[in-house]
Amino acid sequence: MRFSRPRRHHSPLPVEVWALVAGAFAVALGYGVVAPAIPQYAHAFGVSNAAASGIVSAFALMRLVGAPLAGRVVVALGERRTYTVGILIVAASTGACALAANYTQLLILRGLGGLGSIMFTVAATALLIKVSPVDARGRVSSVNAAGFLLGNLMGPVFGALVAGFGLRAPFVFYFVMLVVAATVVWFALRRSPLAGARADDSPREPLSLATSLGVPQYRVLLGSVFAFGWTSFGVRVSIVPLFVAAAFHGDAAVAAWALAAYAAGNAVLIIPSGRWNDTLGRKPMLVLGMLVTAVGYAAFPMSPTIVVACLAMVVAGAGSALVNPGQQAVLADIVGTRRGGSTVAGYSMSQDLGGVLGPLAAGVLVDVAGFGWAFGVSGVLLVLAAVGWASVADSRTLQSPRGPDDAAGAP
Image 1 (cartoon, rainbow, N blue to C red):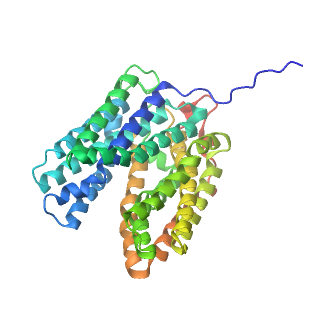
Image 2 (image 1 turned 180 degrees about the horizontal axis):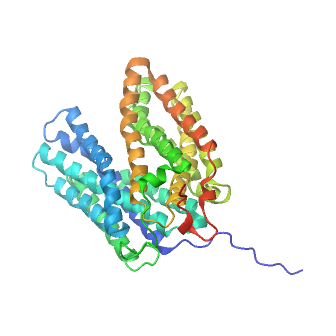
Image 3 (image 1 turned 120 degrees about the vertical axis):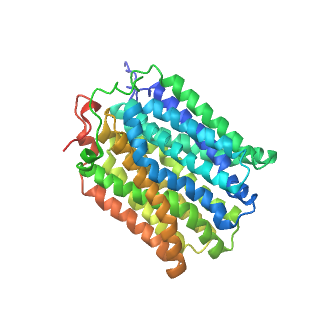
């Protein structure tokens, strides 16, 4: 009997995708090294705890207010140039931070870094959308998320080595990683027909934010990434360690186990999630992922032991792995190959807003009503996002059989 060779279901991803993933890994690795050092470095200038944390807030605030500007810059300069300019702004501000003479200089420089950060974040997302094959948008999103995750996991390892050279050394390391990312992406994409060498290479007019807001899936997406930013980028980082300290009398090392459990749950499903988003659809993955994440956050404050708490974080991380690629794939379905800088900026701004408001609101809830309410509200937001996704059609229906050029989904 003659057997035929099995069909290959997944074609290789374009080299441009891998260049952007390599850039994401380098940025995440550098940030993983510098992030723990920022408050300590600020303390070295003799300021209070509030002032030290203000360095982090300044960066996040400038990302938030700079998002609309970043969208316009992407439309004007093109994605590749905006990526390079933005990442070099962060590199310059980071390198200058290593030479800061006082707290005020450090605050201003980190704020400028936030502007550069949102520029290259919006441009990187737009580039990923542009170079992603229509039938592999979920897979591209999951591979990119895996690059960030790997960089974040390796950051503390490198950070322990770099910290031995002093508080300024992490900033130098991050500077080098940013320059590496800019160099890799610039040379890999400079003659790419997928990325477009010039700002006017896009075959159509820019996709405006007003047009995108007319698409039901985009409106749901904005609420979804707000809830995701609130929980995954806000509450998880700020409130989870506080709960561990209060409930289990744990120190920073014990809190790190809870955060590592979340990362483990995320790592297990992040790659399969991309394939499922492409084969089963965005909608089922997003609805299921939001509900699973909500269960994890709701169960966490009821955990009787740190082991159970870590298991709850594994569940939350697994749910987030189902959500993250799907959200970016929906954005790609809406934008297609159009220059959607403003649309991508709106997406990033909504996520950043959730990341900024989440810790503040959750902190107030903890003080007023306890941890259960803080995590409960987070769970409710995730459930509402799941309801939103259940109420609209799968975004893959926005795609034309002719390809991503018609995937903008204009109303």
